[in-house]
Image 1: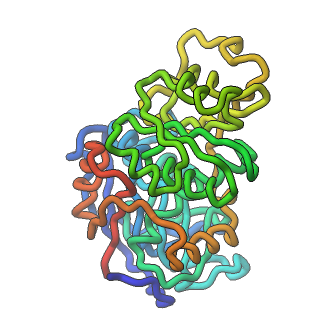
Image 2: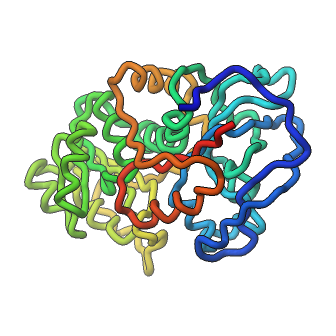
Length: 340
């Protein structure tokens, strides 16, 4: 199993990358030889060791993203690896282990489905760990989104109740483990009764089967409603989620696993009296390096479980990874490792 090391290499002139030249099916993911990206001042070039495969990259490949996504494009909204080149005053050194995610990478500029990627220095999180790349590669987007949603989006506090809608997604499973660590009582959903055990394994106190109408189930357990709700399914169920939250509680809209990002004929009066609606779409800076370090330590100590669905080796298996992700049959994170 490939391990993080402190050994950096000088970048060659060309690299292999997965390129989407036009939207389409899995065959739109083409492996090509392309120039290694030049590093701009204030940016960092990273030799990619592993990256997670995410729903948003499937959306980019299919041409269903917003207008900021242009083609041709190397997808990949997250990655881990080692620093190849950085400004002298950046505090980063060649060979240093780093993670990066979000910030429009893989969308308005090329992402991590490649041997090298360049990103703004502020989007880089340094770390040190002996965990293998297949584990570390599962973490950045998943933990950043979950942690940012719970803290920036919801301000979750110990002793509060949290509903996670879309609980068997990677972000949902991560949010459950983080929320339990913060001292919250967690309710979380699945559309499949057989997957309730996965929620319990992540620490969920009350697994719920989501048939599209959830508020009544929540209020049977919490008559006044939950203190906070993390919405990962999307606009198709948002109104129902809002009614599961107590007055002065908060719903954070973070994802749209069901594919619906807008509400036709939206009116603010659909929000119940006194319930707060916010959103989260943050950046790498929302996951402080010390928080990421604690998560890595907890994983190494066996206190935190990483929901890895499957590990793939090499860019040649990216199509398989996206196909498996789309099928939805294997819960957890799909991770591609670039073996040396």
